[in-house]
Amino acid sequence: MLRLTPGALSSSRLEQRPAGLPPDLCVHGGVAPTRIDMIAFQSDGPVRRAFTSLETLEALRQLGEPVWLRIRGLADRRGIEELLEHLGLPPPLVTPLLLPPQRPQVDCLEEAVMVVVHRMAVGQDAADLISDQVALLLVPGLLVSVEESAAGEPFPDLTAWLLSRSTALESHDLDSILHFLIDDLLDDLFPILERISASLDQLEEQVLAAPSPQQLNRTFDLRGNLRTIRSLVWPLRHQIRILIRERLPLLSDDTMVGFQEMAELVELLHENCELLRNQCDAIGQAYAASVANRMNQVMKTLTILTSIFAPLTLIAGIYGMNFENMPELRLPFGYFGALFVMALVAAIQSYWLWRRGWFQDWTSQR
Image 1: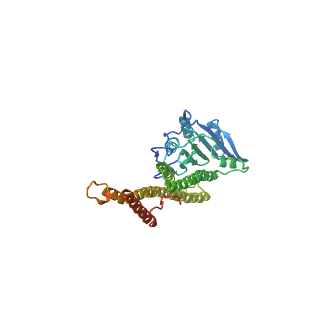
Image 2 (image 1 turned 135 degrees about the vertical axis):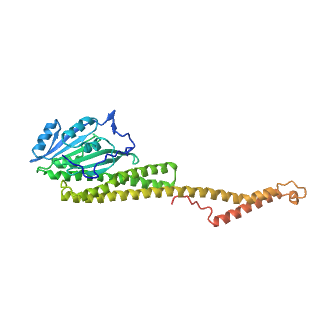
Image 3 (image 1 turned 120 degrees about the vertical axis):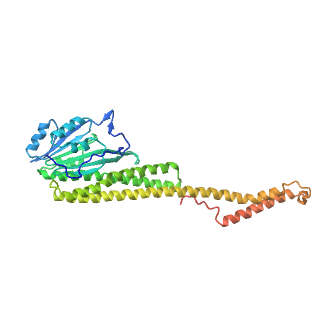
């Protein structure tokens, strides 16, 4: 019977799914259907088997063969709970596995390690963030993975590599598979960050060329995705450090080195998120500067027009007065003379403003 270590498990659900979807990940018509299979690590190599009954799994465990039990979809939540209870797992371990979305966590017991992470992906648009929960539980001789989504093969690259092996796998090697699974989920975040970075680069060029409110809204959406990714990654750093300090006998020395590298990977992901968030802030500042620059250009144009037409308005106002003692009113060419003087003043003032660089367009694309 497992005994909880101090400060171990606490089920803490997220208030909202990272992708902004309902708490249960829904497919066409409801929650993803439940599919269960397993990979038995026999003496002649790993073999994938369909899960038919609990007796088959218990027989493999009694023979001392390590088993990777793979559960996809949570439609039959009651059946999964009964299966895990029959395997001897205590309810505190089962609860976080079956109640998504949970906060990312790495909890260690005396003879068990549980990891809850989120598999992140993006849609056709980099602003569309998609997530599903993946929970991993390691006990002696058994590795259980519970994936909220039932689409596709679970961890296809690792599965293909395992099934290609022709040598036996020791029981303690299941911890290496646990490490590979977590590392695979974290590595999937780098292509997402690269897509977000490419989108931000395009937005930065567009904002400098022709700013619009739609670009600013898209920047805010990408910034929100970065904040979500950071919030799902950063808690793992502290918990992985605690797991390393526990020195559990269930984890080998090589796996502990792998978890140390994983902690560094989490820090790298966090730094990349912070750099991209700073780029989002820079785009917002560039947008404000571009809009202010365009407004300054408009005000400068209005100022030029005002400064040119102000003396012309003065001349027109003087000769528009109806006083009888105005000698210019009697001149035969007074009208054309006034127009000539007005044109000459406008030309001289325009030349003076041009020499001072006022007619230069400060908003033109460089």
